[in-house]
Image (tube, rainbow, N blue to C red):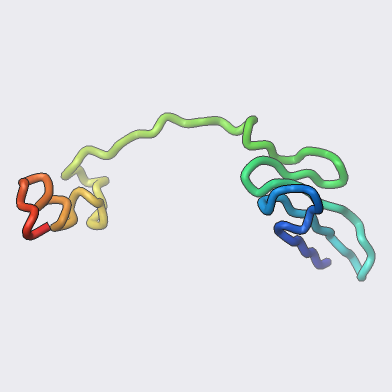
Length: 90
């Protein structure tokens, strides 16, 4: 099986639309169509729609906790300098 898709290939639609095909032994077995930020249809049936996704509450990580990663932006030297008002160092 192989598949292909092409962004911006749908005439009369914005560039974020796409179309494509799934092939088995070189023959089309399914057509796909959608918008990468909104939905995906296979043979006219909607399999994914962003409007039906569950939105989860964003949970922050307390600064300095075990879950706080070394790459946390609050640990960057320039962020710390700005917070301290030391603009020359930032």
